[in-house]
Structures are given as C-alpha cells and as structure tokens.
Length: 386
Image (tube, rainbow, N blue to C red):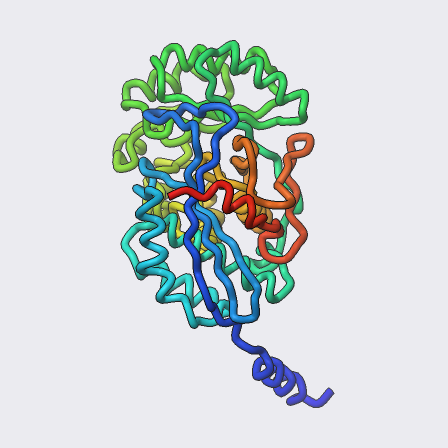
C-alpha cells in the first residue's frame, strides 16, 4: 500500500460521514412507585421521580437518557429539571451534530451552574443516540469493556434488624454476595450492633458495607466505626455533611473502616482534594452529581490515577435506562472494587421492553447499540407526570 493511501482513505471516510443532526429534545417527567419504601437519613422514598430525556435526530433515530431527582444531593427537583432542559439545554443542542458528543457535553457542562441531573440526562441521551447511529455500545464508545459482568450490590433499609437479616438470607439464596446497610438514621450504638448482628448471621463470605447519607455527627460516626470492627465493613459511605471536609479527614485518620465519599464529590476537583487530604479511600460516582456520562468517565480515570476504589451507583430508583448506562460505565471503569449499584429492581415497573435483570447476583453488559435497552414509549406515557 502506498504511504499516502491510508490518510487519503481516512479523509474520504470523514468527508462521507454525514452529521447526525439533533432535531428534537423532549424532557419527560415520570413517577413510578417503589416495591417498598426505602428509608435513609432524613428521607423516606415511596415513589421515584425521574427525568427522561428523549433526543430525536433528523434521520429518525432516538436516544434516551435518565436522571433521578436528588434534592438532598444535587438540589434537583423535577419541575426544575424539566425547565433546565426545555429552557436552557435543548435550545443549545437542537441543530447540532450528535456525533460531536464531547463538544456537546462541554457546552452542557458550562450552560448552567450545578443542575447535574438535567445535564446528565441530556448527555446520556445524546451518547445513546450516537451509539445507535454508529451501531456500537456505550462501553465501546468510551474505550472498550474491561469486563462483561459485574457483581450487583443490594440495598438493605428495613426498620427492624430481623427484617434485614431475613431479607439478606433471601437474597443470598438468589445469588447476591454484596450488601449495603443504610445507617445514620437511628442511635449509632444500635446501628453498630445491627451491623455486627447481620455479619454474624450471614458469615464472612458476603461483602457488607454501610452508607450514612450525611446522617451522622462526628461523635456518632466515631462510635459507629469503633463498634463495628467485628462487622468487617468494606467501607462507610459519607457519614458527615458534604461540606465537612475537616471532619472527614479527622475521621479517616482514626477509623478502622475505610471511608467512601459520595455527596461531597460533585466534581473532579473535590475528588482530588479529598484524596490528597486522606479523607477518602474510595469514591461513589453518580452521573447526576458529575453531570453526565462523559464527565463520570473522566472522573473514573482520575480515581484510577489516584488509587481510589470506585463505587458506581444509580440514585434510588432509576429505570433500566439509568441501570444500563451505569453497567456500561462499570465495564469500562479502571476498577469497581467498591461495587456497582443499579436500582431499577426496586421499582414496581419499568419503561423498557428488555429490562435489566440481575441473575445469580451478577449484572451483564447489554450487547445492543447505545445503552442497549429499548424504551417502550407507551410505558413512558403511562408513568408521565406533571
């Protein structure tokens, strides 16, 4: 082959690539009941309120993205999320080439202050659209899969310890090997005793961690970490308020349990700051906090470079659209040492034709183009809210 043949061929291919022009963007608020209430620090959830974003190209292809409301994490509430898309983000995206998704993600990131949920849903929908057009999966679009299956994490948040133990045994029988306790709700002595009781009940072959959702004072967190040594917790997630950086650093110095950051980590700069301070040994990354798939993939790379353990999670509770997106990201992450949590199975229903399922405690990477699940627009209409 002549030396100049390959560059010429590549230039020809680029010239023949037509833009994937964004024709329409719809912000669709939905509300789906949970199978049972989920209780965490300061919050009782019975219905999941989520934003779906539908991006349609001029050629008729459609991409979908999702973000959950998170008033105590990102400040996002459903009416504001819809307005952010309709009034600010969609006008910037319509008429643009969806194949230039990195450029569009950059535009979205700087179009609004905060508003991570709306940015996330738009970015994910454009990525899904581009993947469907190119006939490649999200994981292939973001560097290729390092793994094709991931251990699923199951959330425990029953009012009574005996109910947590019974549910854990049931889920272990179904193949689950990774559980997260919701703490920061009751007396720290009682919560520590409950964690130890669960460990004694399930044995040492199952992974157990805890998430306080900012619900502890420094005193309560210290009591909890000191009294749960026997529970052998993989990590304690966000025990203190999101802005208590000094407290997290001090707690990390005395805690026998590694600390995981969540609500504190809204951007890469904070991840770096807390890692350098020794405040965290791992990071819970959510697309709604970081503002999209592209931003979260970048954050995963930073965590890998810093030697942080990665925990990826949907907010409680996203549909299979959000679940599929997170699974693809887990498959390209430098590590998923601290687990991947999807949440569609906590809902009474889904809005896709091929819901993401957990089999024998494992999640498998969807193989279709884009995020790999097919949205049922009749189901979307059924659960659409105001």
